[in-house]
Image 1 (cartoon, rainbow, N blue to C red):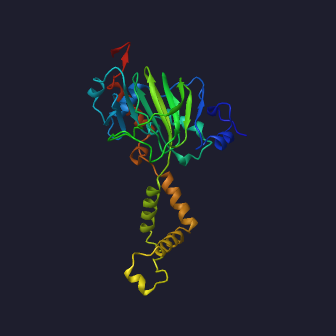
Image 2: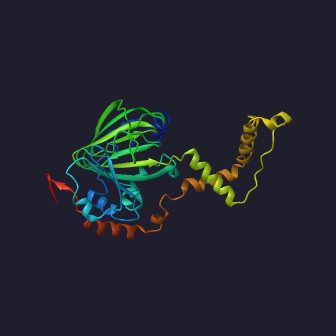
Length: 313
């Protein structure tokens, strides 16, 4: 049995057999004496960069603005009820990337990125569900999490142009996370996190490509290799079939053709390895850690956005 401190009192084997992609798990003090490696101003500095994916979610109607942001935008935010989210912070801040070492009990190619959010008091992105596994590590401050059951494509949603907001809040558990606490959520579990005062959250997300994404990329790979894997042949025909709708026998022929095309294990392994390890932001991986850090420091000096004792800095 292998113990990983970030999993608390359970072993990696227990977590993978009893919780992974099965049910939520709250881990108190997952990282003892956790000192968050990025603060609010540095996060805002990242959101000024054109290469960085960032969003602001504001108010009770969850209005969404997409970055990059101008410095002045942060100087005119309300004192509460908004959230700044920045994707792939691990590619910009080496100390954030170090957090991933604690998750070495999972295949590294399954990890997507670490998104970091800063929320003013009451800030949230609405009740929703994700299609991927996520660990929610609490940074500074507190956040209250409400967690419900499994959702699917038939779960009722509120009309919203940018976010999938659940219409029904049937939550069954509620926890307040402090700095260093962590919540694991399997795919499709409903959840809602609301900031209690100012807080940051580190979201370690895992890749979960859809079937359409997989088929699209695999088809592109096969075309690029100019491989002729077979052609469609007819099932046994009769003259009467000429005047009838397409026979369901053709569906079996198509299925057999696709299955035959996917029977090359070596081809699938090579493609899958490339597909799952392809950088999400290739332009960022070309930067050096030093150049990223320098840009963060410069940007964060110009993004002084946060409130102290209710007054703008």
